[in-house]
Length: 250
Ligand code: ADE
Image (cartoon, rainbow, N blue to C red; front, side, top):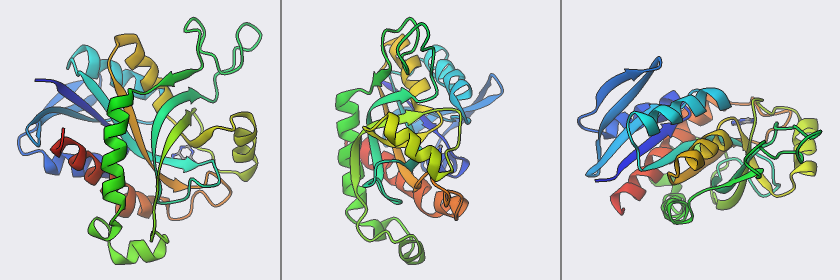
């Protein structure tokens, strides 16, 4: 049976996934805890991604080398860049770019040297299936979130977007930086700190990759507002519900 790797960016998300896995066993590799078990009848290995491109790439490499995962799905939060990527929306990546990659004396801006590309595409079938699961979950937020969170974060009609996510080793939290990113990468829907690196590792191993991110902030001067509460009360619950919905119908 295919082994599915799940990388969660946040502790709360991983805890929710582990609570849904009846029989997980902990295996410690490279100072990380990998949780091997089952979910909806699938062989699953779940792990905290860790933060930033290098840490996430290491985690992904262990999932691929040691645990031989046949598909890798990343869930977490992201800052919205495109005007329509609003807090509470979900972005399913079709491709990812490292926004802080710049070897531009030798290679075009954003191109990863020796890969001949800046953009790393996700697996279309995997991404479509996750987008369908996300649409299902977001069609009725009240089924997954508390009434107070829906009211406080204005989550009455959240939307699913599919498109470009950009990654870099910076938490983007100023309007100036967010606008600069939007100007230089106008297709980017959202920004986070791991996805493009994991996509690159998955390309190296020829393993299908998908990434699902809940928009937690607008990557602007207000980006810190209630971040931890949003992760706990919204993003983690969406991740759990989307993964569960996807695995149930896979
Ligand atoms: N993850 C969630 N919000 C983010 C932001 N504004 N920048 C980078 N990563 C993020």
